[in-house]
Length: 473
Image (cartoon, rainbow, N blue to C red):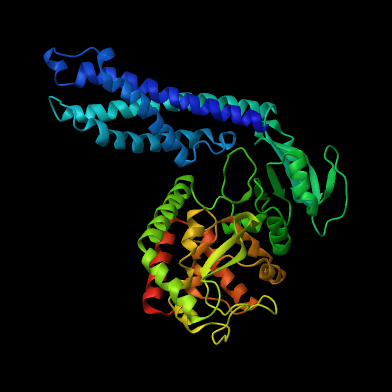
């Protein structure tokens, strides 16, 4: 299935490239013979001899493919609604043509300003029409393949109750199929083992990671009552970092609360637990900002780095920098770097969080912590991709193991890169014990659920305010 999906995606990209090329050639001919000011006076140059045509054929289609990629058009073409596909294509066409018009076409010599309107409208209609037709054709083909059962999404149901039985029966009706290829079900914590005609029990929910790898599962449907929060959290944590779609079969209370958003008129209503925290274009922009800002900070503040490193060295014996293993995105360990703020062998008796009056902290260290200057070397972590400017603060596995005993949803923080600063850090500051870590957790969860470039900038501004005021704790 994965190879077939990749093949369809490649064909989708190829059609977009061909559509953009055909639209550009056709537009170029129209512009040359009907819009160009010289053409209206009978002095038009043959299109084939115009170098601008070939330069455009190199760069314009690549421009469109980049725009489509940043918008997420190629993320999962099998699940895309045809109506949504057309509306998204129209919006991207308006956006893309507007940029092309101001960059490439506004300086054309024309006999009347009305020709600019004709140029814009003709290119928009032409590009949208060709692209939409090609996309609609392949989307219709994919939909027919899904209805025939030739392609689809290998699916496992978690839990076995009336919800699960109703879902299984509905999925047997091909006319309303959304492509779920049911492989079986696994038992939730409070379920009893039972068998259903046509679908088998594959084990318990703890076996999900192995089953997902073995069966190539893409969809996990939770037939668990939405009030059983801990069961849902356990499954969600278990599947953290796995590339699957997690959905919940809702009850009447979920429907009335507005939690359910219809994705398909003929399909089953499900609550989708989204693991994509940001649109594709914002993810790319966030990483670009991280790279640019970290590189700039490392270059501009190099003299300050040298001064602080020297101050740390003079204040007490030991290394200038401190490194420690922390847990990052998808549970991957990495070394975090800081200026050393404690005496050497500060944790000779085992891992321990610092407190306000911690006698392990040096005199220079207290100043560094107050103004968050000890965090400056982490711009290197940002540069190499271990961290971001903004994101939940990374913790040690020793403390994570304690936190998840009280708050299993802590592992949701591993959905994103950890950051130098965070909403939890701004609102709460450094935690002195596990209870405070759990208290700070709600701010980081709230950040992930509202993650955007705009929110990042607000957090950065508040962080700068804290640094200037020296009000960090």
